[in-house]
Structures are given as structure tokens and as C-alpha cells.
Length: 294
Image 1 (cartoon, rainbow, N blue to C red):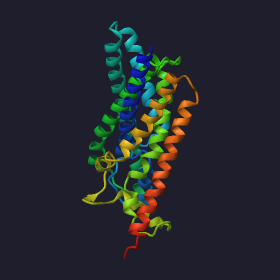
Image 2: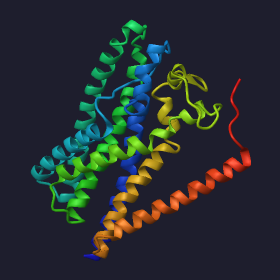
Image 3: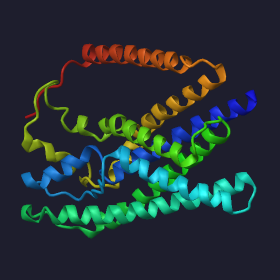
Image 4: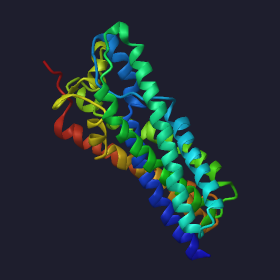
């Protein structure tokens, strides 16, 4: 029994880590979070952009929808395929994730086209390459995220002994991961490097806000370049956050104490805060405040 719980905990942590990376990159490829307000604001201040904006809803509810849909399809198929449990779960999860990614692509396309059409008065054009290039990328990340969350739900239900059905577990995980990615991954879009020539703590004029959608190192920013940048740090940080949450919660089942995960999580948060405080103090002392650009 202990070996099964240890295996389930390790597998759950790994799947959660991967799901966090993929979900964050799906959000970045589709401008579903931080750039969402920027994308809609930019044309109004004459900053035309080439971003794909599929923000159907907030990250938590839409991610919960993809996860619950994929897990429901997987659960129904695995129960009726007549295969061994593990191959049946894997095949059902793949087909369920594929269903979720196709639905995401349909919803995302309609959301992007209708949103750009509403900006016609501000001369924002509908660039088809800005839809067709990031669309398969976003759908791929949705497929991988839904697949990991579905497999994670089966692990939690089967190996870790959760009494809740697989689709319900997937929905809860989708809400949780969407909330984590929306708050954790947002700060890694490059806003901090875009505005770093302003003094720390100074206000940013509204006329500068849309710049994040336009100005890049090699021309216009777009929905393919953004995941390329955030995959280096924002995605792994999101995956680490979600992975630690699931892994530590799984460990509490092994210890048998309900406060084990709470104590471990608060300890990790305290260590991270201490590290951040010393890192910021070291940076300020060594490099000083940012100088205002010309």
C-alpha cells in the first residue's frame, strides 16, 4: 500500500508539473490572461497588433471546461473499450484531450474573429496569419494540458484513493491550475523589461500600456513569440507551483496527517519570501534604481 501511495505521489507531482507548463503556454499563445486587456486596449490608442486573442472566459473556468470534458470522454471510453485498465485509460485520455483541443480551437477562432471585428472603428485589421499561425500551437498546448490533467485525475482517483469521480476531480484541478497560471505566469510576459526604463514604483501612462503588444526585439510581438519567451521561465514556474501543491498534498496522504501539507506549503512559501527579499536587496544595492529613459 505504501509503495502504491509513493508511486501515485511521484506520478501526480510529475503530471501536475507538466500540466502547469502546458496550460501557461496555452494561455500565452492565446492571450487569454495578461495580454487580454492589453490586446483590447491597444487599438483604442492607435497601437494595432498581431496578437491572437482567444479569451473565451477567465483561465480557471475555461481550463476547468477543457479538463472536465477530456476526463469525461476518457472515463466513458475507458469503461467501455473492454481493454486492460492502463491501456484503456491512456487511449481514452488521448481521445478526450483531442476532443477538448478541437472544441478549444473552434471557440477560440470565433472569439478572436468577433473580438477583432468589434475593433473595426479603431482600424484594427483581421490578420489571418495572426489567427492561423498560433491556433494550432494553442490547440496543441490545450491537448497536452488536458491530457496531463486527465491522467492526473485517474492517478488521484485510482492510486491515491480519492472518492470523487474522475471528471469531477479534473474539473477541480482545472479551476486550480487556471487560477495558478493566471497569477503566477502573468508576470513573465516581458512587461517588466518593456517598462524597465521607468523609475521603480512610478506610474505608467495609459498611452504606453499597449506597447507590450506591438514592440518586440525583432519587430511586432505576436502569439508565437510570446510562448517562446515564457517557456523559459513562466511556464516552468507555473508547473513548479502546481506540481508542488499536488505533490505535497499527496504526501499528506502517506503521513496520515491533515496538517502535513499545510505546514510544508507554508514552510516553502516562507523560504521563497526570504530568498526574494534578499535577492531584491542585493539587486538594488548592486545596480541601484532604474534610470528614466530619454
